[in-house]
Image 1 (cartoon, rainbow, N blue to C red):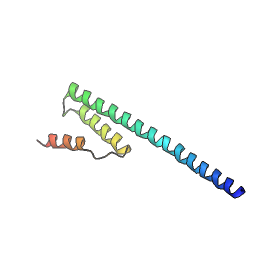
Image 2: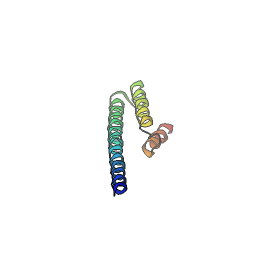
Image 3: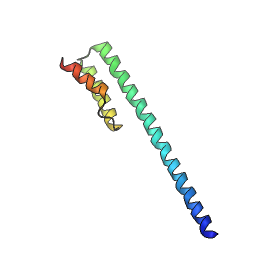
Length: 88
């Protein structure tokens, strides 16, 4: 009986650890989404105010890329579309 109780306690602690470890990961994902959205908005405003090829827009684009890099989202189709547009 003692062994069963011990195994049950270990299983409960393991399950609680899995749940607890998934909460920060979800919070990090939400935080990344928020930071990416903010950086995209700053880039959009810089382009509207100063023009697409302005130093301000270039700086905001670099900041967006840095946020994407830190969040592990270096490569997405919107970004590829931006480069395709720049080449024409």
